[in-house]
Length: 413
Image (cartoon, rainbow, N blue to C red; front, side, top):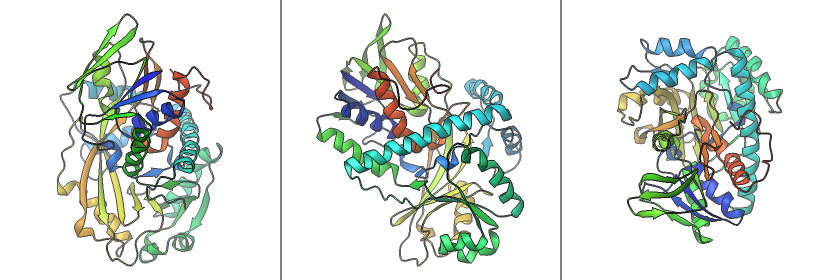
């Protein structure tokens, strides 16, 4: 078939790759001058099944309430005139029970673990360089009480096959000596040796080049202006560079998916949650991190991409606003510099803010809605890089009329 993929982030590009691998003719449409220029550019770069816990947990409502009056909260809620914020927030709160959080976390872990396996197949086949580090990810805590709770929390993922190792303070420093100067601030950590990291934008752009080299069309700088339907099917997609017609279409526009879907009568429970990140050159500093870590107390994630650090933190309910100011990054920069004082040239940090396409239950949207030739692959939230590869394979299987390799119970509406 000829398949039109709408969206050039990591989800759209991996989907185009899997479809092309199956023998389909693919056309990918992206409004930015290059692929992976928005959400896929500035995230933490973690392939982290070990961090599959959903945000919609019993703790979330109180965190959001506190964020109205306190600064430096991991989740920030800001009052808005956007009615969609409140309707989405209500759906989010409905998912914040212990039972639903457990169910959704296990579903998310199923997809994340499968996706990591698909990524490894792609890497083996394509030999892509994306500053990969497969030494695992360290999730550390600053108090023994928090560590004990973290270990108890992690048992849910361990029961689903996630490998974890408990490290004391000395074990943390032995794993990553660059944390030696922060030894007294760390009680211990949970190490997931099978988690990994890598630059998602570098990967996505290299994969897009592979697709184009095999005859696929990557139409960047092309803005979608509408979808035309005929009966129960999409007839064509309108853009500022002309119309595109195919046998099937994939909606992979991330945070912008619900805006386009609404025009054809499809309601998607996706809302943009703003995240912040810093990209910091290592320079000549002698002690950069050797593996990725998450400071669970401050919810600051730190990855190393070759000669750069990527630091991410904060989730802000701010609509489609991607503006930022230096004060937004002061906390995460301070935490990172405290942990790794000789880790990077902090004065040269590059600031970025982007949107995470969140669903209330933190699970992506798959399959068809109303239109028989339109397939959804969108709403991957804060670990889209982790879930993208498996989601792409699932979408290609659904389009090809095959049963996906993992159970879709709970994942396919």
